[in-house]
Length: 101
Image 1 (cartoon, rainbow, N blue to C red):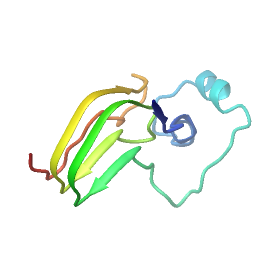
Image 2: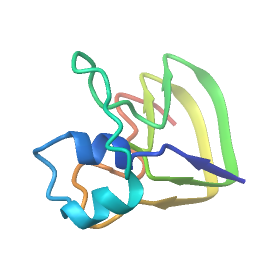
Image 3: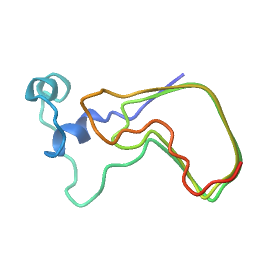
């Protein structure tokens, strides 16, 4: 299974990202815009959750971090592939934050 965050819209919209215009033209030919008052979302985020198992999928093209468990307990992540273009910054793979086990 693939979970695709369609991050290219966000990467091209954010002028701070070093994305070549040709890349944006190829993936966002209509120059679709996004709301100006929201931040780039994370692809998968859990908050204060217990007994999480993530396995057997690919997470790709997240606008921001790919997998972000925050203040969670007892997490298992296995056989997960994370894909993000090297040119795009801040698309970290797995960022456990204030978690245990």
